[in-house]
Image 1 (cartoon, one colour):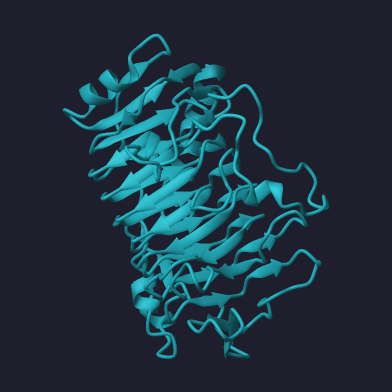
Image 2: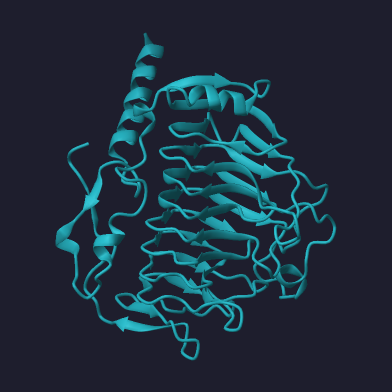
Length: 383
């Protein structure tokens, strides 16, 4: 009887957490028109970011199949795709020797990110070498309504660790970000790559030691990445590698992420109407190469290590890249540079990223604002 009570209590707790969570990106968030401010014309667009209608909670998604590391992961995904639903991974190490393609309507979910490990053994060459192409481990390509949840993904194709620093106060040196990884030149593998897709998500995952980009979002709309822990990558030198990468994408929501020891969190290549909110960063947010403007950076906490090569908000190089787009806004962030000073962090001041190479990276746009947020959403009572 006591066990039954505990089970019922646990189920009610799960129900409560699932239905009444206040996490951005959940179902039930909607535009709050009372928060709109004519001085920020992109606010109504920012309210649309993320998976349309929100990420479905665990109680509303049916587990279609449960597998163990002995089962074939790709074949299991393809079977679940016939009806849609959750492919649940039991505890253990799943060795990934070739790219895994997620399908529309499939949620790849681990029972626990502490006990489910996807160990990536794939090799790939630099994609700019003749006859080579970009390689990824988990691919969400040309699909919709699919997600990766609650697992650990680790790149494990090398016999050595990524080259970086363990201490925030370690001295800068040119070799971390500006010399190529020569110990093994076949480690150019993206961890999770979302491409030409819509309404997909990555949440509650740990992504470690990526070959190159830990998360790469290209030519996609309405993506949500939240509550992921991302640390280290092998290839992060000059040439376009080692990014948390938002490229040619719109309405992407990035929230409650922890991102460490990679090159950039980059917004670039015509990306527009994306929101980065409430993240913990030890890398720069980089308006890298010709974004399309009107991206919102709000409520993030950033502390740049001494050995990192960029300040909290950065852009590209004038003779190599296009300048940032217009209308990119920073609001109520806590951005600490390598010297320990706060930048663009005055409460109530909105800063605009400049699209002119000759000007400072950002300048005040509006000061002494009484509003608390530029992300104008509210929790609906109708779920």
